[in-house]
Every structure is written in structure tokens, then in C-alpha cells.
Length: 305
Image (tube, rainbow, N blue to C red; front, top):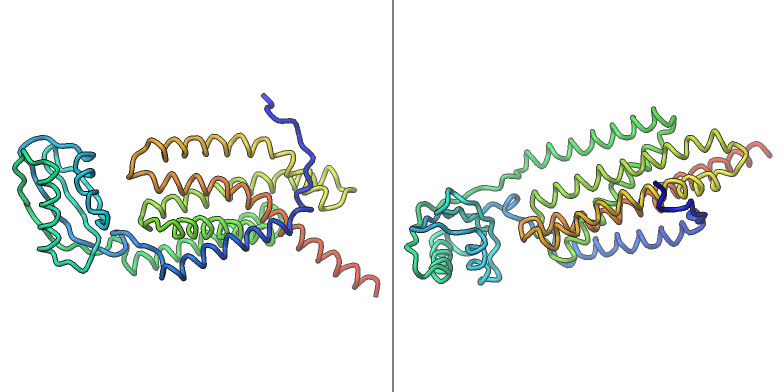
């Protein structure tokens, strides 16, 4: 079933506008990091205080969240323990463990005035993402990027294409990360999962375009490289719009109706879906074109001499 006729858009001719737009997005993200003094790390990175409370009747997490949300400055995570107990993990603050426990108890008693609430235990919990895990994650990213470069270089016989794919991933992840920091969203493991999902989605879209370019290089050998790239993008554009729209719609529903826990993940996916498609068309393809164009120009100058 074909929803779109093959368009004829000169994407390569608009590459400098796209480069300017990417620079603006990078500047916004970098500016947000500088102005805000770095990301707003969550409990996974900072550690905090664990408070377990039990009730004499069954309660729901939504009721607990409503009560704790009365303190706008409180950063916490919730977990159920059976039907009548909860665990609250509160981000480390200037308050002592006793002060924070008292505050949580007061908020819960205000929300559940008819229930008897007992604090079963309180303890300090360290960050689950420590220096060692962060270091291991950095190694994982490095070897993943190296693997992508080697794979694409082997499959498409060009290390440049692999480098362009990695640049697109870094572009997408940093832009989405910068926008989330700009909106003061908390950086936790949920957001990291969203960024990794965006990276995988981005390279998949890029590989699809690379496949079409490779086919057209054989079929349209007499045409210019710029025309081949434009034709390839236009040919996969319908597929890209349909697949991206499905991801976007699902992410939008999760953002609107999924609740507070999944909201940041869904928002990052909403932004990342758009940025991933944009980078494939306006970052990867123009980079390949610019490199090949300059390489051929250098070859012509050397040959004319």
C-alpha cells in the first residue's frame, strides 16, 4: 500500500540551512548545561534517603504521589511493598535523615488522615550509577560506535559512511539531552534508556538510507552524486514518514496518558523521533556529499596538474 508518491525534493541543496539549524540546537543544549551548572541528576546518580512506611489499610501509588507532590521541591521515587506499604526514595538534600523522614510522614498523614502510618525503616542509599558503572558505560559506547564504523565500512566499503552514522547518533543524543536539560528534566536511568533507544532508532534509519544510496550508485552511475543522494532520500521518504509517525503517535499517547513515571521517557522519544529522521536526511547525507565532493575536487585538481 502506497500512501505517498515519490517526491522530488532537493535535500542536498538545503544542507547549509540544516547545518545552521543543528548548530543552533547544539548551542541551546550547551547553553542550558552552562547556565544550569550541569544536568539535574536523579537519585540513580546522586543517591538519597530510603523511607519505608506501612498503612493499616490498602493504598494506591497515585494517592501517595498526590500527597507527596504538595512539596514542590521534593524529588522522589515510589515503590509498593504489598498493598499496604510503600518505599520512598528521596533525592539527597541539605536536610538530615531525621528531618526528611519527619517531612515525609507529615505529608502522608495529611493525605491519609484516617489511617495509622508507621515508619518501618529509614536508611541512606548510595547512587546506583557509580563511577565504575559510568566508566563501563563509556567503554560500551566507545566499542559500540567502533563496531558501527567497522560494520558500515565493511558493508558499504567506506569508513566515512560509518563515521557519518556515528556523528548522527552523537548529534541526536546530545540534542535530545540538551533539550531535556533546557526544560530542567531529571537525568535518571529512564532518560538514559530513552537516549539509547533513540540512538538505535537513528542508526537503523541511517542504514536504510545507505542501502538505497548503494543501490542507486549502481543503477544511476551516470548521474551526479548529489542527484543520487537526493533521489535515494526521496525514495525512502514515504517509508521514513510512516515508520516515524507510528513511533511518534505511540510516544505521544504515552506522554499524555502514561502517567508521571513514563512521561520523561515519552517526551524524549517524541523529540528523538523527529531529530533522528532529521539527522538521517540533513546531517548524514550532506556530510557524505560534502566529503565525496571535496575528494573529487581534490582529485580533479591533482589530475589537471
